[in-house]
Image 1 (cartoon, rainbow, N blue to C red):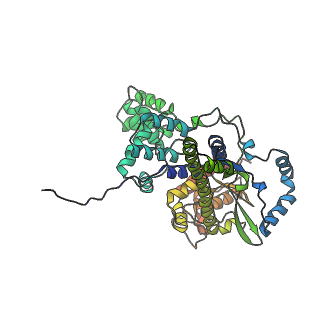
Image 2 (image 1 turned 90 degrees about the vertical axis):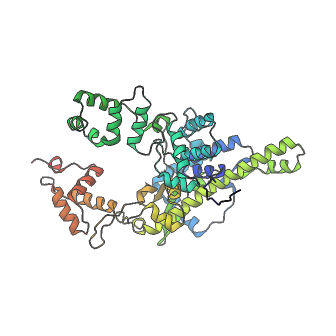
Image 3 (image 1 turned 60 degrees about the horizontal axis):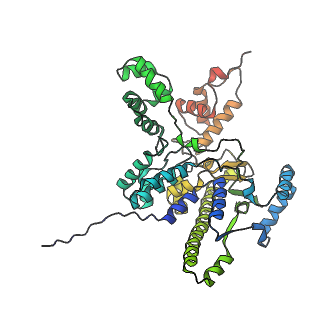
Length: 456
């Protein structure tokens, strides 16, 4: 007798197009320039449309920006240099042709493994999500949900990534990165593994005696294990960065300008080549009777459209996130640089209607230029403090700014103690513990009371 049953299963729905969009979304401005250059070289159907070739009707805002540019004496020489040079922004891109990227290195290894289709797609998506250190910062469950795969498959894909070279790539934290490197060694130093799994803080503080007592082993063995751990590479991805011989300048993706009291968000897209479909190859596809030519061009047209859409989606997502960020941090952009509201990725994701991981990719490595300077977009996200009195200081960045102000104005011969700083902060509506004050001092690079005291 045949029994019928209904079962609900999850299947991976990630497509190559989705992977491409994820990769382009998290590209920095420099990486986007290089990506566009490579796309133009590899796909004859793509052409670079010069921004200045397209007549654009000047709006009031554009006229204002032109006026600001013409009257900016500080940067006048740079504008003249830009006009004298080739207008192709790719010419100013640092040459990294001799340096293999971490992404390319890992993708080559993945292709050689010949993995099953679904796991291969998932693993490639994880490679695209790694940061410059080779770490996977996002939660595995969030990635699995975004990719439409089960957590079990996500774990399998992560194990594949962590088996690649360099050792330690794909780790989710420092402890896991060091452990992965130790497990590659023969023989494996089990004591060193135990230390990186549960006692990294003690190692950082050189508490060798405490480690010896806690792990019930000799001091010599502890010293040997710690020396081995210190010889490991905590950031394996950085080995694939450029040598630093060429200076790479920050290219802001977004500009925020105050025009007659209204904050305008502008993309700096004009600094990047605009991609378009070649009219010559479009005509050739219609007129050619050769089946091989038609097959080749059809494939290239599909790739070209995906590339253009991925780049457009990057700018649209970045613009949406920035508009939300500017709306939430109006005080900062109107001149009060110490007025950063508590703001998290989940807050922006909820307001914009995107997944938190998408917002994370959109702002990663991106820079914003405004009247106060150029800032990484991550600068505008600040954690909310716990108890706050009077709602005066509610974020960690605001608290640090207030703490720095108190220390800068103190009597250098009688510097304020952490306890006294706690009291002053509380009077301003910011209730913090002495331990938190000390932590913020360390993060700001400010020494303790004894080190700050000047002798008469």
